[in-house]
Length: 169
Image (cartoon, rainbow, N blue to C red; front, side, top):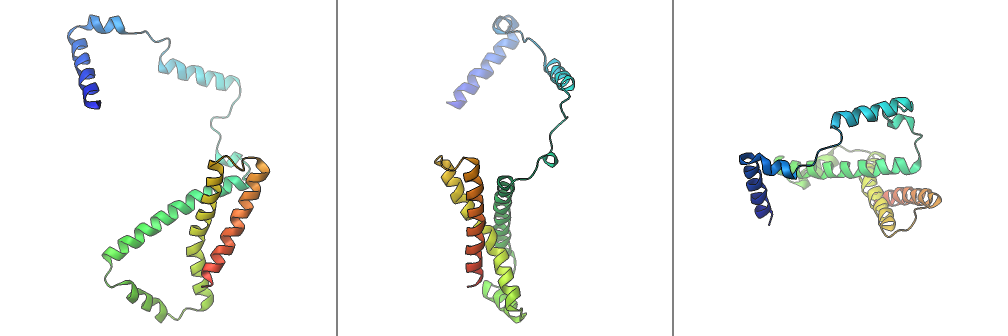
């Protein structure tokens, strides 16, 4: 279907080049040019003393704003981590057991191991619980501001508790 539409459009343009009268008959004059529109836009903004562009620094950070940024950040971080882990598994010699033995041979303390496990598990747990929150929003629940803040605190609490449980394993 798309190929037929493309063929029709190209034939129509070819005919318009051969007979420009046909093309002019169907043309509609524009009221203003893009340059004139932009000049009107900037003149109106200057008269109203509007700032050039609002930037993130003029906003007071709120919990929903921070959680939104963190949700995107954890998603990007996990995607990059999984990609790098997969690439390392393909490129580096040895298997997973040999690298696990290497880490064990370093004789790292339990506090450091638990902290590392916490740092690895937290993005997954936070992203998971915040994803459940987004699913609730998808069905239309929890859009009032007190509910948004309450669900944000619940997501943070669940993420920390479930991450601590995973890190303790």
